Image: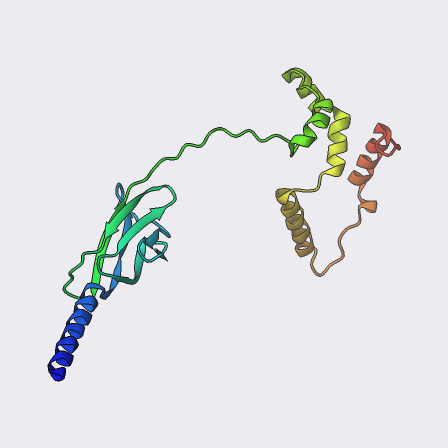
Length: 208
């Protein structure tokens, strides 16, 4: 009697274990997440296994491959796309399963945002006191084109990329042109003396 009972429970346990393994079988789940309109890969889409709390990430071309179980519920999400729910079939013929999951783009419209220059609310009173209302376009244009202002900006502003590269190329060209010989000195150049005299008469060397 004891042997029969032990055999019965052993068969039941074996059958239950086999059934549980069949229902909860691991599979290799892979595929592509593609856009529904252009069939392009959805880069770095997130695939969440809802009932297990695991998250996988697709590659830059939308390809994904990870271990899952039969009957798992998956949740495909990506910024700019509507989330998609997918359930893996419960009874599969083999341990590998592939899908192509389409995802639809979703447009998100954010409200207009105005960025103020005073940083925080506590700085607003002082910023309001220092506020200078803009003049009309003609007055602003005259003020921006003022010669003294332009001269001051010209002294303070550094060379941009185009000017610096042009100067470097000219210097390199001059060194290459006079390679192996002494470059000429402008002190013996009559044109340079003429330009110097004209600048002296204009007052370019006077202290401002």
